[in-house]
Image (tube, rainbow, N blue to C red):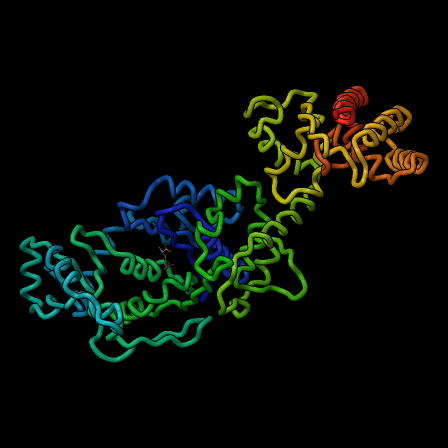
Length: 500
Ligand code: GLU
């Protein structure tokens, strides 16, 4: 039987790292096995589902370049792929279970249920299941129950959890998992009084009708699994293989959440993470591929993914490691592609005027020439505009102490700046090594290190001690602008040197 897997998000929040990891593993598993990857929207919770989150889902996966073979937008033979478009089906299947004596109508009103919940504070040591629904309606004679339902009495449909025995399944990752039926939530609702299905019913019916062969989902769904197994059994269906994926934790060992930093994919995207880095890093959260390698393209991952290479232990999300991946992928980009990727960040940050201003012709070519200067230094794309700002407008004059190399003073810094500025017109800046050599010789004559000769000039030109390569920057800025900045800085140093 060919592999069919699905990503089945509920559109009740933004796509985050955990969801993308689930989707990615399913996608990779399908690709590795020549199977199909399906998107199904589980929007049974009508109050929490929203169009905004559906849009975010499409945007996110579109950006990542992860595509499904069947889904709401692309169609497919097992649609519709949105649960709210399948509501009629679920009642039909719930009724089938009632007819087979595996489920029953429950007429308990919300007030009775909430009274029951508040009366039933769990005793120490009692599991959650022991204070759930008391199964009052399970004993109503079936003809009587049918008559009441047909007369229009409000009701839900509940699944009969066997009162004794155990339910087990073999998780592909975790091995055999067994639950005492007495510990399974007593008689969960399958169909609500408004006719809407619960997650459990819709999920099982759809996995069956869509012929899903493997369910790969987060470990937090393990408690639902016995309920689902009981349902498969009640329907007489073969369940899919289950594989519950390791948790993704923050550095403190708690489930990854906003407390640890960004978790929504949007936030990474806005900060300038590139999709290749995010995919590569997320694919490694709880799985390994080949030894001795860190960087994998989506195609590599799709070829190499195997369930037996998923870890049982939780994965820890390491923001620093992700940043390292991002730097690697940024450096691997062609200059032209990287320039196109950086341009929107520069426009938004106001590099070319007020935020949102597009570059003029001159600014555009300056930007194109400048990108290679920062390529080696970027951890993420949104850092670029600040690093390049000194090329587009004069930076504020740095505080005097920034100009002064270690162990020297302001008058000496002013002197070195004068020497460096005077040397520049003699340098052919299209030949960087030769220019550097000139500076080296001059530094020896002046009795200082090369770095000390360059430092005041660097701060004067770029506004900072740490900057993209200086000679290239000077070449891009042009001599007149550079000499003007140097003169201003010398004046500031002279004033500081003569101050009492
Ligand atoms: N709709 C569930 C979710 O939001 C799907 C869980 C499952 O994969 O069964 O994660």
